[in-house]
Amino acid sequence: MNGVRIESVAAEGKAIAHVHIGDDDREGGSCGRVIFVEYAVPGDVVDILVTKKKKNYAEGRVIRIVEPSPDRQEAFCSHFGLCGGCKWQLLPYHLQLEAKRQQVYDQLVRIGHLDVPEVKPVIGSEQIRYYRNKLEFAASNRRWILPDEDEADIPAENRQGLGFHVGRFFDKVLDISHCYLQKEPSNAIRLFIKNYALEHGIGFYDMRENRGLLRTVFVRTSEGGDVMVIVCFGDESDKIFPMLDALAAQFPQISSLYYIVNRKCNDSISDQTPLLYRGNDAIYETMEDLRFRIGPKSFYQTNASQALELYRVARNFAGLSGTETVYDLYTGTGTIAQFVARQAAKVIGIEYVPEAIEDAVLNASANGITNCSFFAGDMKDILTSDFIAEHGRPDVMIVDPPRAGMHPDVVKTILEAAPERIVYVSCNPASQARDLQTLCTKYKITDVQPVDMFPHTIHVENVCRLVKIEE
Image 1 (cartoon, helix red, strand yellow):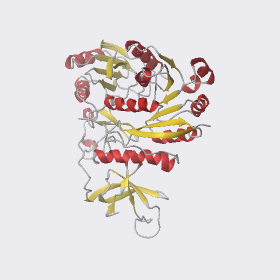
Image 2 (cartoon, rainbow, N blue to C red; image 1 turned 90 degrees about the vertical axis):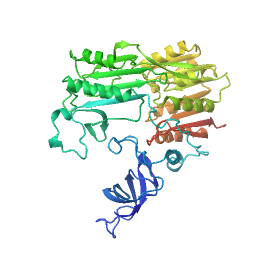
Image 3 (spheres, rainbow, N blue to C red; image 1 turned 60 degrees about the vertical axis):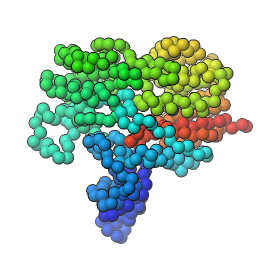
Image 4 (cartoon, helix red, strand yellow; image 1 turned 180 degrees about the horizontal axis):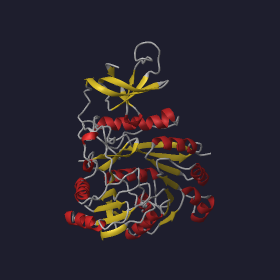
Protein backbone atom coordinates (compact mmCIF):
# COMPACT_ATOMS: atom_id res chain seq x y z
CA MET A 1 0.00 0.00 0.00
CA ASN A 2 1.52 3.27 -1.09
CA GLY A 3 1.31 6.80 0.27
CA VAL A 4 -0.55 6.06 3.51
CA ARG A 5 -0.68 8.92 6.01
CA ILE A 6 -0.25 7.93 9.66
CA GLU A 7 -2.87 9.62 11.83
CA SER A 8 -2.30 8.86 15.50
CA VAL A 9 -0.72 6.62 18.11
CA ALA A 10 -2.62 3.49 19.15
CA ALA A 11 -2.41 0.86 21.86
CA GLU A 12 0.69 -1.34 22.19
CA GLY A 13 2.85 1.37 20.69
CA LYS A 14 1.52 1.03 17.16
CA ALA A 15 0.26 3.84 14.98
CA ILE A 16 -3.07 4.09 13.15
CA ALA A 17 -4.05 4.89 9.59
CA HIS A 18 -7.41 4.57 7.87
CA VAL A 19 -7.26 2.83 4.51
CA HIS A 20 -9.31 0.77 2.09
CA ILE A 21 -7.89 -2.72 1.69
CA GLY A 22 -9.28 -4.97 -0.99
CA ASP A 23 -8.82 -8.71 -0.94
CA ASP A 24 -5.89 -8.31 -3.32
CA ASP A 25 -4.79 -4.89 -1.94
CA ARG A 26 -6.64 -3.10 -4.74
CA GLU A 27 -9.98 -1.32 -4.79
CA GLY A 28 -12.97 -3.58 -4.40
CA GLY A 29 -13.99 -5.67 -1.44
CA SER A 30 -12.96 -4.75 2.07
CA CYS A 31 -11.37 -6.49 5.02
CA GLY A 32 -11.04 -3.44 7.24
CA ARG A 33 -10.66 0.32 7.40
CA VAL A 34 -8.11 0.61 10.20
CA ILE A 35 -4.51 -0.50 9.85
CA PHE A 36 -2.07 -0.69 12.77
CA VAL A 37 1.52 0.04 11.86
CA GLU A 38 4.68 -0.46 13.94
CA TYR A 39 7.47 2.11 14.10
CA ALA A 40 5.50 4.91 12.47
CA VAL A 41 4.90 8.47 13.68
CA PRO A 42 1.73 10.55 13.25
CA GLY A 43 2.20 12.72 10.17
CA ASP A 44 4.39 10.20 8.32
CA VAL A 45 3.44 9.33 4.75
CA VAL A 46 4.61 5.76 4.19
CA ASP A 47 4.40 2.73 1.98
CA ILE A 48 3.12 -0.25 3.96
CA LEU A 49 3.37 -3.99 3.55
CA VAL A 50 0.18 -5.56 4.93
CA THR A 51 1.15 -8.47 7.20
CA LYS A 52 -2.25 -9.43 8.63
CA LYS A 53 -5.85 -8.94 7.52
CA LYS A 54 -8.85 -9.24 9.81
CA LYS A 55 -12.51 -8.43 9.29
CA ASN A 56 -12.36 -4.96 10.84
CA TYR A 57 -8.68 -4.10 10.81
CA ALA A 58 -5.29 -4.93 9.35
CA GLU A 59 -1.68 -4.81 10.48
CA GLY A 60 1.36 -3.78 8.52
CA ARG A 61 4.92 -2.55 8.60
CA VAL A 62 6.64 0.38 6.97
CA ILE A 63 8.73 -0.52 3.93
CA ARG A 64 9.45 3.07 2.81
CA ILE A 65 9.04 6.53 4.27
CA VAL A 66 7.67 8.71 1.49
CA GLU A 67 7.47 11.86 3.61
CA PRO A 68 8.64 11.87 7.22
CA SER A 69 6.50 13.55 9.85
CA PRO A 70 7.88 16.87 11.17
CA ASP A 71 7.68 15.19 14.59
CA ARG A 72 9.76 12.17 13.62
CA GLN A 73 13.14 11.94 15.34
CA GLU A 74 16.05 9.55 14.90
CA ALA A 75 16.24 6.53 17.17
CA PHE A 76 19.28 6.79 19.45
CA CYS A 77 19.78 3.05 20.06
CA SER A 78 21.51 0.83 17.49
CA HIS A 79 19.23 -2.06 18.50
CA PHE A 80 16.03 -0.12 17.83
CA GLY A 81 13.47 -2.17 15.88
CA LEU A 82 15.12 -5.49 16.77
CA CYS A 83 15.14 -5.42 20.57
CA GLY A 84 11.40 -4.75 20.83
CA GLY A 85 11.77 -2.39 23.79
CA CYS A 86 11.77 1.43 23.77
CA LYS A 87 9.45 1.44 20.74
CA TRP A 88 8.71 5.16 20.95
CA GLN A 89 12.23 6.46 20.35
CA LEU A 90 10.97 7.97 17.09
CA LEU A 91 8.42 10.08 18.98
CA PRO A 92 9.46 13.25 20.87
CA TYR A 93 9.02 12.83 24.61
CA HIS A 94 6.23 15.39 24.99
CA LEU A 95 4.21 13.49 22.38
CA GLN A 96 4.88 10.22 24.21
CA LEU A 97 3.35 11.78 27.32
CA GLU A 98 0.31 12.95 25.36
CA ALA A 99 -0.12 9.44 23.94
CA LYS A 100 0.06 7.89 27.41
CA ARG A 101 -2.51 10.33 28.73
CA GLN A 102 -4.80 9.35 25.86
CA GLN A 103 -4.18 5.68 26.63
CA VAL A 104 -5.38 6.18 30.20
CA TYR A 105 -8.43 8.11 29.01
CA ASP A 106 -9.32 5.46 26.44
CA GLN A 107 -9.09 2.59 28.92
CA LEU A 108 -11.06 4.31 31.67
CA VAL A 109 -13.63 6.28 29.67
CA ARG A 110 -13.93 5.13 26.07
CA ILE A 111 -13.58 1.40 26.79
CA GLY A 112 -14.35 1.23 30.51
CA HIS A 113 -17.30 3.69 30.37
CA LEU A 114 -16.31 5.10 33.76
CA ASP A 115 -17.35 8.50 35.02
CA VAL A 116 -13.94 10.14 35.25
CA PRO A 117 -12.97 13.78 35.81
CA GLU A 118 -10.13 15.26 33.80
CA VAL A 119 -7.21 12.92 33.26
CA LYS A 120 -4.37 15.16 34.36
CA PRO A 121 -1.25 15.62 32.21
CA VAL A 122 1.23 12.80 32.71
CA ILE A 123 4.04 13.53 35.16
CA GLY A 124 7.09 13.02 32.97
CA SER A 125 10.41 11.50 33.95
CA GLU A 126 13.35 13.87 34.38
CA GLN A 127 15.63 11.09 33.13
CA ILE A 128 14.55 9.60 29.82
CA ARG A 129 17.69 7.49 29.35
CA TYR A 130 19.55 5.33 31.88
CA TYR A 131 16.58 5.53 34.24
CA ARG A 132 16.21 1.87 35.25
CA ASN A 133 17.84 0.43 38.36
CA LYS A 134 17.41 -3.22 37.38
CA LEU A 135 17.95 -5.23 34.20
CA GLU A 136 17.98 -8.94 33.46
CA PHE A 137 20.12 -10.30 30.64
CA ALA A 138 19.66 -13.79 29.18
CA ALA A 139 22.44 -15.94 27.74
CA SER A 140 21.77 -18.15 24.73
CA ASN A 141 23.78 -20.35 22.40
CA ARG A 142 21.31 -19.37 19.66
CA ARG A 143 21.51 -15.61 19.42
CA TRP A 144 19.28 -13.67 17.06
CA ILE A 145 20.78 -13.49 13.59
CA LEU A 146 20.82 -9.89 12.33
CA PRO A 147 19.25 -8.99 8.96
CA ASP A 148 22.64 -8.30 7.35
CA GLU A 149 24.13 -11.61 8.52
CA ASP A 150 24.20 -14.96 6.75
CA GLU A 151 23.67 -17.64 9.37
CA ALA A 152 25.58 -20.21 7.32
CA ASP A 153 28.72 -18.05 7.51
CA ILE A 154 28.66 -17.56 11.29
CA PRO A 155 31.04 -19.86 13.22
CA ALA A 156 29.73 -21.59 16.34
CA GLU A 157 31.68 -19.35 18.73
CA ASN A 158 29.91 -16.30 17.30
CA ARG A 159 26.42 -17.70 17.82
CA GLN A 160 26.48 -16.94 21.55
CA GLY A 161 24.56 -13.95 22.88
CA LEU A 162 23.95 -12.13 26.15
CA GLY A 163 21.10 -9.66 26.03
CA PHE A 164 17.31 -9.58 25.76
CA HIS A 165 14.80 -12.18 24.63
CA VAL A 166 13.36 -11.56 21.18
CA GLY A 167 9.56 -11.42 21.13
CA ARG A 168 7.73 -14.55 19.94
CA PHE A 169 10.93 -16.65 20.08
CA PHE A 170 11.49 -18.17 23.53
CA ASP A 171 14.96 -19.49 22.66
CA LYS A 172 16.34 -16.45 20.83
CA VAL A 173 18.36 -13.67 22.47
CA LEU A 174 19.42 -10.43 20.84
CA ASP A 175 23.07 -9.86 21.70
CA ILE A 176 23.29 -6.32 23.09
CA SER A 177 26.31 -4.08 22.60
CA HIS A 178 24.97 -1.00 24.41
CA CYS A 179 21.68 -0.49 26.25
CA TYR A 180 20.41 2.97 27.22
CA LEU A 181 18.14 1.76 30.01
CA GLN A 182 20.60 1.42 32.90
CA LYS A 183 23.61 3.51 33.83
CA GLU A 184 27.12 2.14 33.95
CA PRO A 185 28.65 -0.18 34.94
CA SER A 186 25.69 -2.20 33.61
CA ASN A 187 26.86 -2.40 29.99
CA ALA A 188 30.48 -2.98 31.00
CA ILE A 189 29.53 -5.80 33.39
CA ARG A 190 27.41 -7.55 30.76
CA LEU A 191 30.14 -7.36 28.12
CA PHE A 192 32.83 -8.53 30.55
CA ILE A 193 30.79 -11.60 31.54
CA LYS A 194 30.08 -12.44 27.91
CA ASN A 195 33.70 -12.10 26.82
CA TYR A 196 35.01 -13.99 29.85
CA ALA A 197 32.65 -16.88 29.10
CA LEU A 198 33.75 -17.00 25.47
CA GLU A 199 37.44 -16.86 26.34
CA HIS A 200 37.21 -19.56 29.03
CA GLY A 201 34.96 -22.04 27.27
CA ILE A 202 31.91 -21.47 29.45
CA GLY A 203 28.88 -22.71 27.57
CA PHE A 204 25.94 -20.39 27.01
CA TYR A 205 22.52 -21.71 27.94
CA ASP A 206 20.55 -23.82 25.46
CA MET A 207 16.90 -22.99 26.08
CA ARG A 208 15.63 -25.93 24.10
CA GLU A 209 17.80 -28.56 25.76
CA ASN A 210 17.95 -26.94 29.24
CA ARG A 211 21.73 -27.18 29.41
CA GLY A 212 24.67 -24.81 29.42
CA LEU A 213 26.46 -23.06 32.27
CA LEU A 214 25.93 -19.29 31.80
CA ARG A 215 22.20 -18.64 32.03
CA THR A 216 21.10 -15.17 33.22
CA VAL A 217 22.65 -12.04 34.71
CA PHE A 218 20.84 -9.50 36.90
CA VAL A 219 22.31 -6.05 37.48
CA ARG A 220 20.80 -3.73 40.11
CA THR A 221 22.04 -0.21 40.77
CA SER A 222 21.02 2.45 43.27
CA GLU A 223 20.94 6.23 43.11
CA GLY A 224 23.67 6.23 45.76
CA GLY A 225 26.07 4.15 43.65
CA ASP A 226 25.48 0.65 45.04
CA VAL A 227 25.76 -2.19 42.52
CA MET A 228 24.37 -5.71 42.92
CA VAL A 229 25.10 -8.47 40.41
CA ILE A 230 23.46 -11.90 40.39
CA VAL A 231 24.89 -14.46 37.96
CA CYS A 232 22.69 -17.51 37.35
CA PHE A 233 24.27 -20.77 36.20
CA GLY A 234 22.61 -23.85 34.79
CA ASP A 235 24.57 -26.30 36.95
CA GLU A 236 27.43 -26.67 39.41
CA SER A 237 30.90 -26.22 37.90
CA ASP A 238 34.45 -25.51 38.97
CA LYS A 239 34.38 -22.63 36.45
CA ILE A 240 31.90 -20.59 38.50
CA PHE A 241 34.17 -19.21 41.22
CA PRO A 242 37.04 -18.14 38.89
CA MET A 243 34.47 -16.19 36.82
CA LEU A 244 33.07 -14.48 39.91
CA ASP A 245 36.58 -13.68 41.16
CA ALA A 246 37.47 -12.12 37.82
CA LEU A 247 34.23 -10.12 37.80
CA ALA A 248 34.84 -8.79 41.32
CA ALA A 249 38.44 -7.86 40.47
CA GLN A 250 37.41 -6.03 37.30
CA PHE A 251 34.56 -4.13 39.00
CA PRO A 252 35.44 -3.23 42.60
CA GLN A 253 32.32 -1.04 42.68
CA ILE A 254 30.17 -4.19 42.87
CA SER A 255 29.04 -4.01 46.47
CA SER A 256 26.92 -7.18 46.43
CA LEU A 257 27.80 -10.25 44.32
CA TYR A 258 25.50 -13.28 44.28
CA TYR A 259 25.21 -16.45 42.24
CA ILE A 260 22.41 -18.95 41.73
CA VAL A 261 22.43 -22.50 40.37
CA ASN A 262 19.14 -22.88 38.49
CA ARG A 263 18.48 -26.28 36.96
CA LYS A 264 14.80 -25.59 36.17
CA CYS A 265 13.37 -25.10 32.71
CA ASN A 266 12.43 -21.47 33.42
CA ASP A 267 14.50 -18.44 34.44
CA SER A 268 12.42 -17.31 37.43
CA ILE A 269 14.47 -16.98 40.61
CA SER A 270 11.51 -16.53 42.96
CA ASP A 271 11.87 -20.14 44.11
CA GLN A 272 15.67 -20.19 43.99
CA THR A 273 18.25 -19.52 46.73
CA PRO A 274 20.69 -16.71 45.89
CA LEU A 275 24.12 -17.42 47.40
CA LEU A 276 26.16 -14.42 48.53
CA TYR A 277 29.66 -14.76 47.10
CA ARG A 278 31.18 -11.43 48.05
CA GLY A 279 30.21 -8.10 49.61
CA ASN A 280 27.00 -6.96 51.32
CA ASP A 281 23.79 -8.96 51.34
CA ALA A 282 21.76 -5.97 50.07
CA ILE A 283 21.94 -2.58 48.44
CA TYR A 284 20.03 0.50 49.60
CA GLU A 285 17.84 3.18 48.06
CA THR A 286 16.84 6.47 49.70
CA MET A 287 13.50 8.22 49.27
CA GLU A 288 12.98 11.49 51.13
CA ASP A 289 14.23 10.62 54.66
CA LEU A 290 13.56 6.89 54.28
CA ARG A 291 16.10 4.20 53.47
CA PHE A 292 15.06 0.94 51.83
CA ARG A 293 16.95 -2.34 51.84
CA ILE A 294 16.89 -4.17 48.49
CA GLY A 295 17.86 -7.82 48.53
CA PRO A 296 18.43 -10.12 45.53
CA LYS A 297 14.71 -11.00 45.28
CA SER A 298 13.22 -7.74 46.53
CA PHE A 299 10.73 -5.78 44.47
CA TYR A 300 11.49 -2.08 44.11
CA GLN A 301 10.23 0.34 41.50
CA THR A 302 12.70 0.22 38.63
CA ASN A 303 12.69 3.99 38.06
CA ALA A 304 13.66 5.25 41.52
CA SER A 305 13.32 8.97 40.91
CA GLN A 306 9.87 8.56 39.36
CA ALA A 307 8.85 6.19 42.16
CA LEU A 308 9.22 9.18 44.46
CA GLU A 309 6.82 11.19 42.26
CA LEU A 310 4.39 8.26 42.13
CA TYR A 311 4.35 7.80 45.89
CA ARG A 312 3.89 11.52 46.46
CA VAL A 313 0.78 11.39 44.30
CA ALA A 314 -0.51 8.37 46.24
CA ARG A 315 0.17 10.08 49.58
CA ASN A 316 -1.55 13.26 48.44
CA PHE A 317 -4.59 11.33 47.18
CA ALA A 318 -4.80 9.46 50.51
CA GLY A 319 -5.50 12.79 52.26
CA LEU A 320 -4.19 11.66 55.64
CA SER A 321 -4.51 13.73 58.81
CA GLY A 322 -2.69 11.44 61.25
CA THR A 323 -5.71 9.64 62.68
CA GLU A 324 -6.42 7.10 59.93
CA THR A 325 -5.94 3.35 59.71
CA VAL A 326 -4.44 2.65 56.29
CA TYR A 327 -4.28 -0.69 54.47
CA ASP A 328 -1.51 -0.95 51.85
CA LEU A 329 -2.36 -3.92 49.63
CA TYR A 330 0.38 -5.49 47.50
CA THR A 331 2.88 -3.58 49.64
CA GLY A 332 6.05 -5.18 48.23
CA THR A 333 8.91 -4.15 50.50
CA GLY A 334 6.61 -1.70 52.26
CA THR A 335 7.71 1.40 50.39
CA ILE A 336 4.29 3.06 50.11
CA ALA A 337 3.30 1.90 53.60
CA GLN A 338 6.32 3.58 55.15
CA PHE A 339 6.00 6.59 52.88
CA VAL A 340 2.57 7.37 54.38
CA ALA A 341 3.14 6.00 57.91
CA ARG A 342 4.05 9.32 59.53
CA GLN A 343 0.77 10.85 58.35
CA ALA A 344 -1.33 7.90 59.63
CA ALA A 345 -2.22 6.33 62.97
CA LYS A 346 -1.63 2.77 61.77
CA VAL A 347 -0.63 1.07 58.51
CA ILE A 348 -1.27 -2.57 57.59
CA GLY A 349 0.78 -3.92 54.66
CA ILE A 350 -0.01 -7.18 52.85
CA GLU A 351 2.18 -8.85 50.23
CA TYR A 352 2.40 -12.28 48.57
CA VAL A 353 6.23 -12.65 48.60
CA PRO A 354 7.57 -13.58 52.08
CA GLU A 355 11.05 -12.24 51.34
CA ALA A 356 9.56 -8.85 50.47
CA ILE A 357 7.75 -8.75 53.81
CA GLU A 358 11.00 -9.62 55.59
CA ASP A 359 12.58 -6.61 53.86
CA ALA A 360 9.57 -4.45 54.79
CA VAL A 361 9.94 -5.31 58.48
CA LEU A 362 13.68 -4.61 58.40
CA ASN A 363 13.17 -1.34 56.52
CA ALA A 364 10.49 -0.10 58.92
CA SER A 365 12.69 -0.89 61.91
CA ALA A 366 15.72 0.82 60.38
CA ASN A 367 13.61 3.88 59.54
CA GLY A 368 12.27 4.11 63.10
CA ILE A 369 8.70 3.43 62.00
CA THR A 370 6.67 1.66 64.68
CA ASN A 371 3.09 1.95 63.41
CA CYS A 372 3.40 -0.46 60.46
CA SER A 373 2.49 -4.16 60.56
CA PHE A 374 3.21 -6.48 57.63
CA PHE A 375 1.65 -9.79 56.61
CA ALA A 376 2.71 -12.28 53.91
CA GLY A 377 0.37 -14.47 51.88
CA ASP A 378 -2.09 -14.57 49.01
CA MET A 379 -4.15 -11.38 49.14
CA LYS A 380 -7.52 -13.10 48.66
CA ASP A 381 -6.71 -15.49 51.52
CA ILE A 382 -5.39 -12.91 54.00
CA LEU A 383 -7.70 -9.95 53.37
CA THR A 384 -10.90 -11.37 54.86
CA SER A 385 -13.64 -9.97 57.04
CA ASP A 386 -12.07 -11.74 60.04
CA PHE A 387 -8.69 -10.12 59.31
CA ILE A 388 -10.31 -6.69 59.12
CA ALA A 389 -12.23 -7.30 62.34
CA GLU A 390 -8.97 -8.20 64.08
CA HIS A 391 -6.84 -5.34 62.76
CA GLY A 392 -9.40 -2.58 62.40
CA ARG A 393 -11.54 -1.23 59.60
CA PRO A 394 -9.48 0.83 57.15
CA ASP A 395 -10.20 4.50 56.69
CA VAL A 396 -8.04 4.50 53.56
CA MET A 397 -6.92 1.68 51.29
CA ILE A 398 -3.96 2.01 48.95
CA VAL A 399 -3.76 -0.77 46.35
CA ASP A 400 -0.91 -1.35 43.90
CA PRO A 401 -1.60 -4.76 42.32
CA PRO A 402 0.38 -6.57 39.59
CA ARG A 403 -0.51 -6.07 35.92
CA ALA A 404 -3.38 -8.55 36.08
CA GLY A 405 -5.16 -6.38 38.65
CA MET A 406 -7.03 -7.61 41.71
CA HIS A 407 -8.76 -10.94 42.29
CA PRO A 408 -12.57 -10.50 42.38
CA ASP A 409 -12.61 -11.75 45.98
CA VAL A 410 -10.22 -8.93 46.96
CA VAL A 411 -12.42 -6.32 45.26
CA LYS A 412 -15.45 -7.76 47.07
CA THR A 413 -13.69 -7.56 50.45
CA ILE A 414 -12.65 -3.96 49.78
CA LEU A 415 -16.28 -3.06 49.13
CA GLU A 416 -17.33 -4.82 52.33
CA ALA A 417 -14.60 -3.01 54.32
CA ALA A 418 -15.95 0.29 52.92
CA PRO A 419 -12.97 2.60 53.49
CA GLU A 420 -13.70 6.30 53.06
CA ARG A 421 -11.08 6.61 50.33
CA ILE A 422 -9.28 4.24 47.97
CA VAL A 423 -6.05 5.10 46.16
CA TYR A 424 -5.58 2.72 43.23
CA VAL A 425 -2.07 2.66 41.76
CA SER A 426 -1.76 0.61 38.58
CA CYS A 427 0.82 -0.25 35.95
CA ASN A 428 -1.97 -1.44 33.63
CA PRO A 429 -4.88 0.97 33.03
CA ALA A 430 -6.86 -1.81 31.31
CA SER A 431 -7.04 -4.09 34.36
CA GLN A 432 -7.42 -1.01 36.54
CA ALA A 433 -10.50 0.00 34.55
CA ARG A 434 -12.00 -3.48 35.01
CA ASP A 435 -11.57 -3.31 38.80
CA LEU A 436 -12.86 0.26 38.93
CA GLN A 437 -16.07 -0.78 37.22
CA THR A 438 -16.87 -2.90 40.27
CA LEU A 439 -15.56 -0.44 42.85
CA CYS A 440 -17.58 2.38 41.32
CA THR A 441 -20.81 0.69 42.35
CA LYS A 442 -20.10 2.31 45.74
CA TYR A 443 -17.36 4.86 44.94
CA LYS A 444 -16.78 7.76 42.61
CA ILE A 445 -13.49 8.64 40.96
CA THR A 446 -12.40 12.15 41.94
CA ASP A 447 -8.84 12.36 40.59
CA VAL A 448 -6.79 10.65 37.88
CA GLN A 449 -3.02 11.21 37.65
CA PRO A 450 -0.81 9.24 35.25
CA VAL A 451 2.94 9.03 35.96
CA ASP A 452 5.50 7.98 33.36
CA MET A 453 7.93 5.45 34.80
CA PHE A 454 9.22 4.10 31.47
CA PRO A 455 10.14 6.69 28.80
CA HIS A 456 10.20 5.49 25.17
CA THR A 457 7.92 2.56 26.03
CA ILE A 458 4.16 2.14 25.82
CA HIS A 459 3.79 1.63 29.57
CA VAL A 460 2.33 4.12 32.03
CA GLU A 461 1.45 4.08 35.72
CA ASN A 462 -1.87 5.57 36.72
CA VAL A 463 -3.21 6.67 40.10
CA CYS A 464 -6.94 7.06 40.78
CA ARG A 465 -8.53 8.52 43.91
CA LEU A 466 -11.92 7.08 44.86
CA VAL A 467 -14.29 8.48 47.47
CA LYS A 468 -17.17 6.54 48.99
CA ILE A 469 -20.59 7.57 47.80
CA GLU A 470 -22.80 8.65 50.66
CA GLU A 471 -25.89 6.47 50.89
